[in-house]
Image 1 (cartoon, helix red, strand yellow):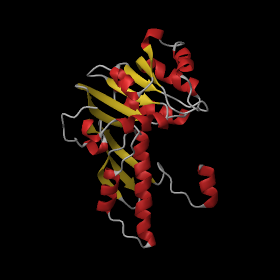
Image 2: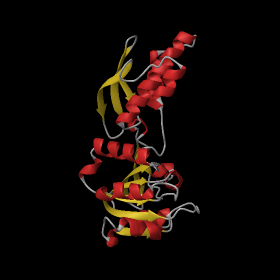
Image 3: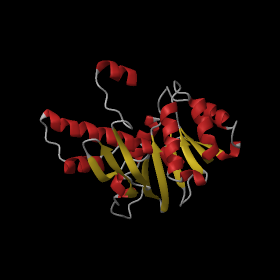
Image 4: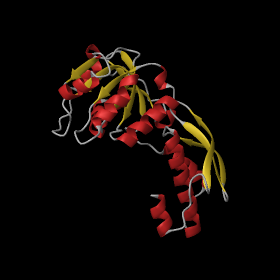
Length: 246
């Protein structure tokens, strides 16, 4: 990609012409300082998680600042607000939810290819989630390198729930169970016909990871009503708590 950019323009590259320093990350937000030859901004706050999102935000910041040279007015404050308010549902999307009197920490990520899964687990480790094994809800499409993804998940999984996706491209639960059983005990692998069935298998206080497919991410996001979310990753904002259950 870099070679193509160089052949068509004068590249402005992360790490060479601009960079992020002093990155500080939390469970719901992260901060960094932006440095280039022409601009320095401290304490940029973003709600997107992972070191790669700091690079993405820095690149977006550089592009926005260059627009000023083209006659557009993009203030430093507008840049800060835009980056702070950026939301990407289903991309290391952390939610604390209340389900049938059970409080569950849920991480939803649509990672469905090798690169996406590797980045997901980099962030997973970076934020300390890898210290203890978690419950994984998993589904994947046939054209994906699902054997690689299964092998990547297995060391971090104390239990796997295979959620059936209503799509003829989805790998069957039977095939996935055979694949996971190469790495973890069969009694730690369950199948669920619906999202409700999957959530009924989860105990209060658990951290649950839903990963492997954008279809899976969408299915779970549609299932959770807003008034069941006690806290979400969007800038660390807390939703109003209610007694409404899923």
